[in-house]
Length: 189
Image (cartoon, rainbow, N blue to C red; front, side, top):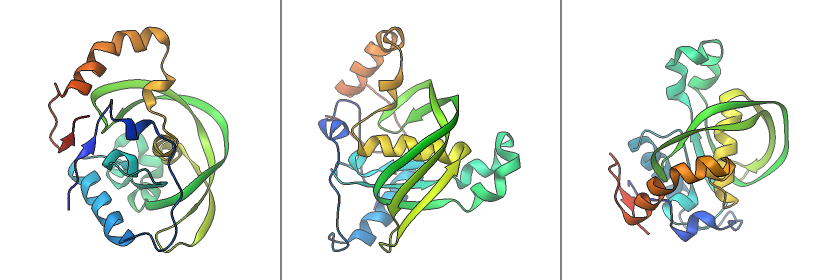
């Protein structure tokens, strides 16, 4: 089932999320709906707060990026990179910082350069509640960091300079008021 995505201005996007247990009601159905919602909106990641749930859960699927010439060297790894992250905890962010033009399904039609580390180590449970600690690099690390921020109540616009934030103020206010056009279902605050 495709769910409406919460947009900028919705309070749930600013809350630090709560951990869940293995017996969370219909967890497998929720995960399936999140992937379906993300794919229908042409996203590469989706966090539970974006669909109105204050829980530490996000999904990532960067397989579409495998076809991008920019990622030709790692296309094989990207092709099969579809993951579920439950109760994730960032262990380490290291390496070189690099800028990349990010967008967000909860902040439609806004893209800005954000600087993030190129390597992360994260601890999480997968969809079977198997505990994992893994290190990721490149675009996979970036997408995971972006989604992890969502479960911490952080948006990519929080990383922007004061000047950039001022320049975006009207666009963000329009999103909050519902003055936006998207190809996917949204829920206005």
